[in-house]
Image (cartoon, rainbow, N blue to C red; front, side, top):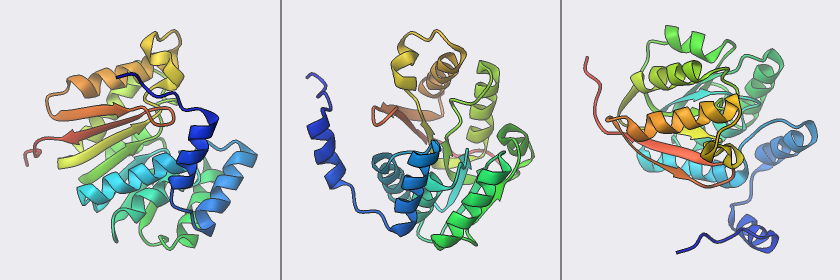
Amino acid sequence: MRTVEVSDELQKYLDGLVPKRDSVLARMEEEAHKENIPIVDPHEGQLLYLLVKIAGAKRILELGTATGYSGIWLLRGTDGGTLTTFELDHQRAQRARTNFSDAGFGKQALVMEEDALTGLEKLDQRFDACFIDLLNVFPSEDSTQRAFELCLERLEGGALLMADNALRQGEVANPKNQQARNVARYNALVAKHPRLESVVIPIRDGLSVARVKDQLPG
């Protein structure tokens, strides 16, 4: 069966099926468009919300907060859960805190202003889901692998491990630059790891979704 090409007409139809966003998310989408802030689109946001809700996740880990758009979708899927999210840029971290508060999650979202790998090394906590939104940012395949390992070590059995930009605009099929090689490395790690069962969903720039099969000892 061939893949359906998403024409402008079909995209408009799909856009009409996404639930209408509230004023907070709508404002954030407009700001992201005007200021070129990298955020997931509403289709992927709705998918993140549904995945977290279906999994019954309550404790979420996120790498790459930006201004909090994906974090709000994730939190809305938790039914009262918490989010620990890393953002190195001070201005974006401050905006994210304001947006979380405006969305009613001021006490549920903890924005950590530090490098994600450095922060993960110190983080002694287990989570039910993790969303990595830094695959386009890691400087090397080694740092990408380290992020993968640190996240997986902190996930309970049955937890979700998700990552944005898993297709790198199609470049992963024949990676010729460092960022594409990083993403391809991440996809290979997920696909081959014995603790994970996974799929890459070709939505937007690709969403990698994996489920942890077993419980960590200790």
